[in-house]
Length: 283
Image 1 (cartoon, one colour):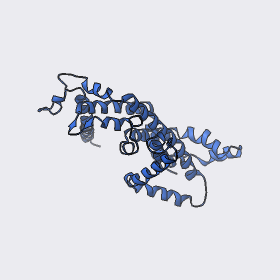
Image 2 (image 1 turned 60 degrees about the vertical axis):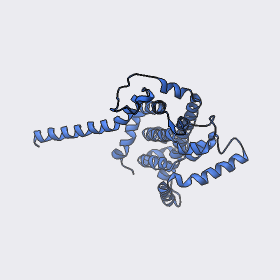
Image 3 (image 1 turned 120 degrees about the vertical axis):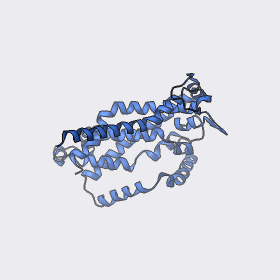
Image 4 (image 1 turned 45 degrees about the horizontal axis):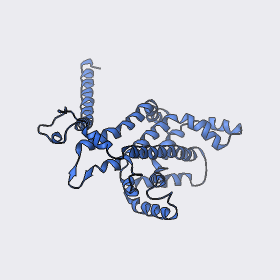
């Protein structure tokens, strides 16, 4: 192989990666800068990448909202959805990957078909169900934690992702546990969950990011500040014919911090989960 050609290819690849990183980081850096700008400088020409004068008014406007309540609601909803998805998706994936029952392949195929149905198609029937449930009990249905969490408690994508990983677990390990008298629930708890840690971390990150950023469903199913999540609460900064861009960008910066923290904690397992299928195969 020509050493000069190899170096040229590496240079081109590195340049392309750097250019891609700049393009992806550009909007975030602009958001960060705008969060510290006075309102008059948001649309200044030429654009100001470095705020001058530097102001915290955008953050003050965000904190003037019932911000702690929005943050608490988002945390409760996101953590609950992640926990339920991990448990339900892993259990269902284990059944589809390792248990033999009539119609297993057909049922899994039907579940995959539901991935093609946009969530917006289900909004009206879901909302009607939540209204009816709220009429039965004010503790469930619309404008409750149940209404925010239940529609996302189990997702087909999570089942698909976990099944691909669990299928790679050797059957001999599971058979040995059954011969020792372990029930399927014990196998799931003591063997499958520990082995599937990287895949669970991957699912947890994907689910947390989706739940934390979800705007449409919380906007529809909530109608009071006491139940609004952070994305919906920050949208309240927008008023008729006006938009507080500095405060909106400040809210966006605050919103992204928990996602970065979750990824930083689970990063190693996340990478293991993404590469496990390529190394082990899907079974």
